[in-house]
Image 1 (cartoon, each protein chain N blue to C red):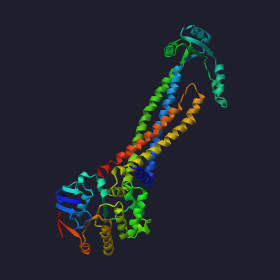
Image 2 (image 1 turned 45 degrees about the vertical axis):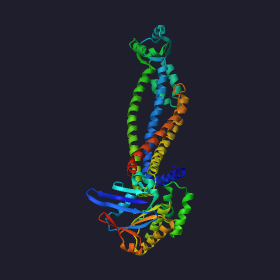
Image 3 (image 1 turned 180 degrees about the vertical axis):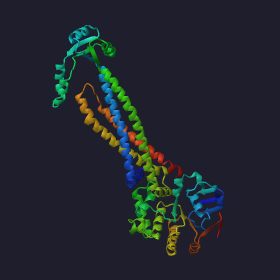
Image 4 (image 1 turned 90 degrees about the vertical axis):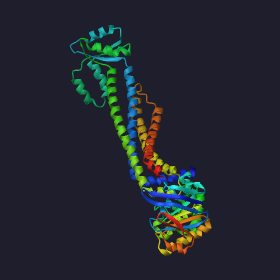
Length: 291
Length: 215
């Protein structure tokens, strides 16, 4: 195919999409939604991965002490243990002081904490992070300790939620992907139907059937590319508007890579393009068979 | 140029063409005459390979037709239809130019040739109008120009005057005869009109019940 043929094909594809703008736009929107969901799931995975890594790297845990027990005595016992690096007592007053900073401007929310029976807590730092779950289970049975809270516990919960989200997200993604494929397929079939006289005339005038098909493949690709490009832009907007500020706020937790996001955007554009192209390829099979 | 030997074509039990032997030389003008349903259009469709299944042999320039790729064969031929087959959303010029575009010609090559041929058939001043703004005769002249744009060596015309009144039909036939001489190409005109054949004496094959005889 020479440059001139490509120019004619581009022009005809543009005219073709304009004639069939409703179906083409609907197909592009579906591809946009499907690819956007894929992007959000991927971004979520990166975020969850960072969060998990951070939580699992923590060696600290918090023990809530029975109000009837002697907090200082328990802290002294714990300090003697070989696996303990440091022990720090946090009283209700200290905790409220810390929370005051968190609730700045929303002091009315702090009132409920002030009025509640908050027990003393002991912040424990271990020497070895791999022992944290085992130690937590043992301390849970110790007299005077009502509750043990440790980061790995949250990590497990987050991992469970994340697995559920990925499962349903993947299902949704596959459903929307199939819907988008079907929509491009229908849009292309509609275009083929609308232009059947033109196709016949072109073929009778000596057009190479692959050139004629190429025009429709190009249209399918364009629909997929536009939809997925918009989704990639939306993902970048989400990344720069939400995740980068989050990273600035919690630099030790999140480490989003700009390069990785660019690669992801490229991948999204490629996936959408392939979706449009493959649907168009499937819908024009008959054209090539009967050319 | 075109040679048919023992050509047979049938749809199931129904025989359309039976043991046809024809030979159209380069630069020759011929009519293929016959009543509706006699197999004329089927023969033409076999020649430009809109239909591909047949028994016997069709040679184009001494090459079996099935050995020539469909689009390459069609680039050797111009085809004109009774229904003109102009694209309604394209102007006269765009319709004509389409023939050049599909074979990858540059606009710089297409435009002067299209203008020359449109001027030749008296439609240059109407190059920017759409087909529905033209009369039947004018539409057929546009279709002829489109078929001739790539200077094919063979022109096949399937009832080119079938949708035209007798006066316009005469004019279009006159034009085809003149272009045959000017462009030096083989022309095979399919028609059911005896009158037309009488008005333009030329080699004529008569098709009857799938068989052909020279008149």
